[in-house]
Length: 313
Image (cartoon, rainbow, N blue to C red; front, side):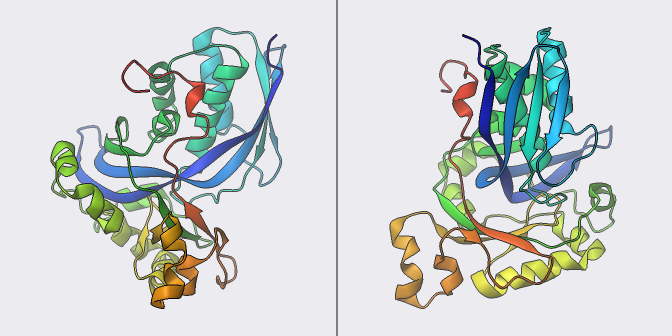
């Protein structure tokens, strides 16, 4: 019997644990290296199958643009698969916009994964990722469903096994136009590339968990948006480390490892109580700011809704 609806589908945000700009292509696109990690701060989507072929979005929270990435993802999959079915997309937007956390891209990926199941397509993951790249450079990562070493313009993904981590994430009210950052004279474009094989063979993963690299976009972002620097300083005062994710304006800090010993470490060592606090909204934020204590995800909750090639499952 055909599925009629899928409810409570998560669309998790991501953090860039570092983001290096290592060059620029002839077409103007910047070449990046990064590690993307999904976190448990999510939007929620509900998909209801339609027989008339229409694609309709219903905003349950913050209104979205008329033709957002969710609808574009559904339209692209409908056309590529040649199906006559449609969908009602109900979206409860919880992730802040203009944060550099990939919220719109994650929504699009959840639509692709959900419709792959709702419409009975059974596409393998590489086929969905190829379609996803046409929607945006971050969408294939979310379809991939695992923490990843990311290169190129965001399309070259190597899955990583990372230790569970906890993060404090803060988003000030301002949003930043990505174009302004990539066009800034302050943007460094010649960071020495790291080599994944060497990184994995050394203590790179341990150094990554402890704060490897930097975000090359951060100086330019702080120059055009003072609130990024304010958020970074606010988190640094409480957690001892902070950096911007993506092109901002959200900033995050490591808040410890996701294990039982870490959850009690603050009471034993005198560390800031905030670092050992339960997950949930951050307290004491300035007016208009939003923030949460989050956990990293080792896999996307919908990972099994697309099949991996042999050897990658």
